[in-house]
Picture: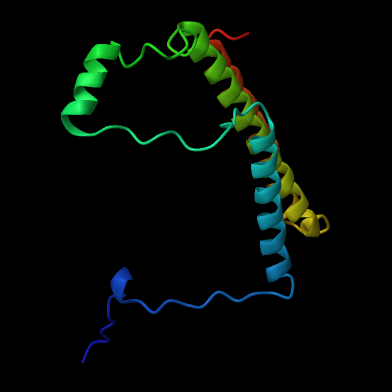
Length: 152
């Protein structure tokens, strides 16, 4: 009888192997959580307008609300014209690009610090290349976005 081999099981029927954690597995997770928390804190502290005062009064419903809307005019009347202009969009885009660039750079720095253990191993050049290409990618992406929005 010829030697018959079974084909591998489909991916959804394969048994999942549990991930093994090294002695520093929890420390790395904590460092990642700390870095994300620090990035979120940095973002929230930079030029983000926060509401002042309490809650807005409840809006009227039904016919009263509709008639009040018709009497008061356009619903965009109270908004600043800067928010609806090209300059407002450019300011928002500049803020978004700068913030995204800072967060990406912090993530790359965190990756560099998380891979310091590999300095004396054959993996060091791979990690160094990842970090270097990541930095170039972030720099070029931010530059392209600024050029697209004509912010430079």
